[in-house]
Every structure is written in C-alpha cells, then in structure tokens.
Image (cartoon, rainbow, N blue to C red; front, side):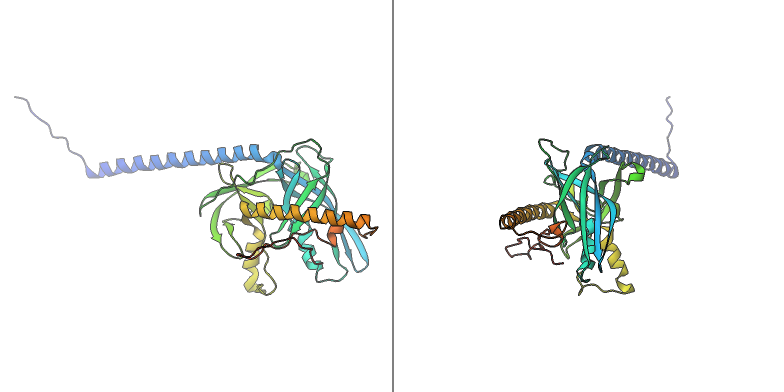
Length: 317
C-alpha cells in the first residue's frame, strides 16, 4: 500500500522568501536605472558639448569720469550652424547695465568678443547682436563665418518634462580647468505660470545660465535664465531673500519661447543695421566703442498675451 506524505508550508518562510525576491527585484531595477542615467549623461556630453562654447570679452566700465576694463569669460550655446550663439544677458553685463540705468554717467559695454570652440584658445571674432533683458537672453554672432558650419543645438527639437523628471545641461568649466565640458544634473520641482511659463529645477543649475537644458533622450526643454522682479514686485528685506535666491539660481524658459525671442532678436539686429547704414550715408558719426551701449541692441519685452506686436525697441540706459 502506497503511503502519502503531506508537504506543509510555513507562512513565515513564504513571506520571507517573497520579501527577499521583491527586494532583489527592486535593487536590480535601481541598478539598471542608475546605469541608464549614467549612459544618458555620457551620451549627452558627447552629443552636445561640441556646441557649447566659451565667449571671451572685455567689459568696459565708465563711471564718474573714470574708465576701467576687465576680462571675462562665459558659456554660450551655438543654436544655428551659421554661428549664432545664445547666452545669459545677466552674465554679459546685464546685471551691471540694470544698475547703470539708475546712475547717470555709468555705462557698461562688452567689447572685443571672441568665441572659443573646442580646443581653440585664440578665438573667433564675434559681435553682440541683441539682448532681451526681460528674458535674460543675449545673442552673439560669429563674424564672417564664411562657408564654415558649426556644431549646433536645434531648439526646435523640443520636449516637455513632468515634475520629478531628470534634466541635464552641459557647460564648460573655466580656463584653469582647460574649459573641459561637464554635465550638470537635477530634476524638475515645479511648473511656474508667473511671471511666465517656466520649469523650476529642484537644485540650482546656476553654473549653466544661458545654456540649453535637456531631457534624458537629448530633446531640448529650454534655456536656463534668471528672472528678477520689477521694483514694485521686489519684497526686499530678509523676507525677499529666498525669493531672490530662486530667481538667481535659474529657471528653464521653454524652447518655444526662446525660439520666438530669437526671431525678435534677428529682426531687431536687421533694423539696427538698416538704421546704421542710413546714418552712415547721411554722414552721421556716432560716438562710442559700441552703439549697442546706447541704442537698439535689445529686443523689447514680449507683448502681453492676446496682444499683437512685440517689435524690438531700444534699451533705455
């Protein structure tokens, strides 16, 4: 007669087994996610760094009858194969220019612009084409690019991001570090609606001001900018400190807005060139090293929603 044996399961052992399996699965998923993130950053650095350049210039400051010059370097990104570069207006002297408006006789002019690409330490001559102080953007055009086509970042290949999504930027370190390209990483913390549509990073991306911000796949989210309050909006004092820090740390202006601002900047530059040609033909000699310090180098603020216009206008000094 065949005997049968009953196999019994201990509930505690079963629970421990399932727990161990789940823990291993979660750990494996985390390891894979970390590996994917590393691969994303490496691919991004390789693909985008050739279009990230260094803009070297001399800042000429005049105040109370005195004049001094200081050399500076900032990052920029080539956004057109013909050599158009976008960068931070704040870093291109924009902060001092805003202060200069309140101080008669105080002017700030970036001069002798050169663009350093890759391992080039000599630089290519360039011109400050336009500014948009409201959006904290400036555009620099390489002089006489000829037939050369530069590595560039296509802002039209735009993507969106959700809260919690990882985002990256690529910047170049300073001269002391041989201007090596580096990745800056964080995640999206919020979507702001005022003063305009903006993506808010969880951690500061200040080192990448004026540069494109990317999703893991390499699509462009926008450009990192600062947003300073108007005088009537500035709370001031200690109560306004955290708000100012958020503005300076950098916010992502969506790529579509950057594209529209770039078109306004191009139009502003064309109109200024036309005006200068007319003045030259009429024998009107202008004083100053750079007419942009005194006239229409800045595209005006974007028009309010629902209104036509947005034609660039001179920046008030």
